[in-house]
Length: 155
Image (cartoon, rainbow, N blue to C red; front, side, top):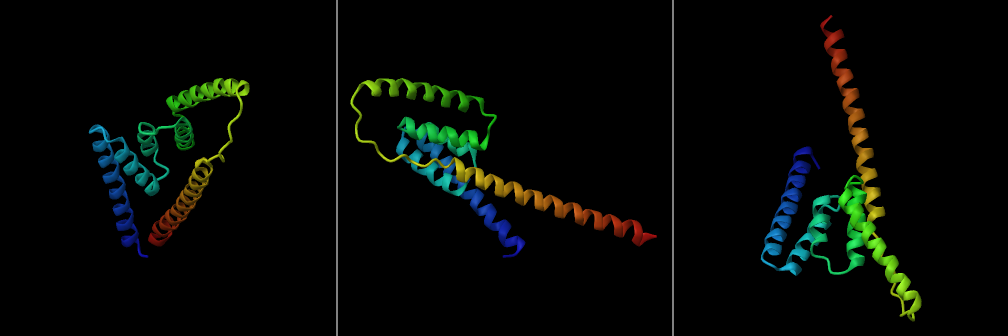
């Protein structure tokens, strides 16, 4: 795939993401939480590393387990998001309180734990960081070659 085709594909994907996010905002503003949820989930499949999409999803999730996963994703993407950290700690405190109550009550059959996307997010971020490092290294080498040609080629 040539550079123009890759750029066009990236632009199209970015445009799809932006359209889904905007359509989700409109649906949410109109009170259609389920539609907003569906649109933002689709946007998350396009760009799972967007803090924006996880912040939007946080507003339409119904269960604390889903909110916790969402907050974990936000923190994996942006470790400096203080509000997400506070909310996650608050859910942790509520979970501890519920666990204390459940310890007294008989335990219901447990469902299998849902895997969190935080690990794949970290892998993806690492992959992006490595690719960026390679690109910067190649750019440095090309710049050095260009400078050498300018300096020694003119002499």
